[in-house]
Amino acid sequence: MPRSLELDLSSRELPRFIAVEGNIGVGKTTLAKKLAATFNYDTLLELPEDNPFLERFYRDPKSAALPTQLHFLLQRSQQIQALRQDDLFKPVRVADFLIEKDQLFAEVTLDSDEITLYRQVYDHLTLEAPKPDLVIYLQAPLNVLQERIHKRGIAAERSISDEYLSTLNDAYTNFFHYYDEAPLLIVNCTDIDIVDSQEDYHQLVEYLLTVNSGRHYYNPGK
Image (cartoon, rainbow, N blue to C red):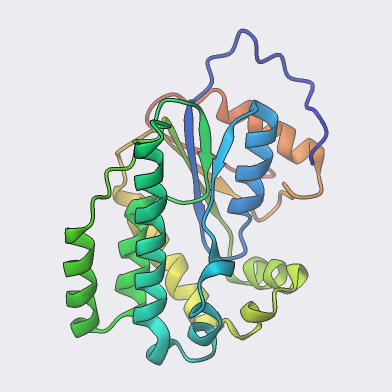
């Protein structure tokens, strides 16, 4: 649990729904949890540990891509449906994913026939997620991602290739180049440690609280 920040939030207008995105290992789930603790928000998190196909996908992407992607899609659909049934769209929360990015992964991992099937399933699901008040996109180069993946030591991730991470980095860059559905903060994570450095985290929070429209870039150390 992160230490309390010395921030006076009583007079600050906080984004009520924050979505954190980025490549594998960049720290999106960690940041989502820390923001939730700081703002006393609920979390809406991806559950990769519940996907029985994920480890197979990392070992053999071609054979396991479709069931892996469909499992994530159905999982997110169920999460959104649960929110709607419980009328939880209004309370404040932090998510570690955007539902729109699901198709980004599908386009990277699936062949043309699989993409067709995936899109048919996607189109039949009701995926009306609430629009974020702020999207935070965490960026990091390949060597930083691999270092952090190695550090966290998840067995299933040991076989993630440089090629796959690089392809995802390119796909994320392209996706957010055109993204304009919500205020966007693009964070260069190369030289910051939001896991172990309270100062780095504190400065990021101070900056994100100034973002209420448009596209912004946070490049500490530049």
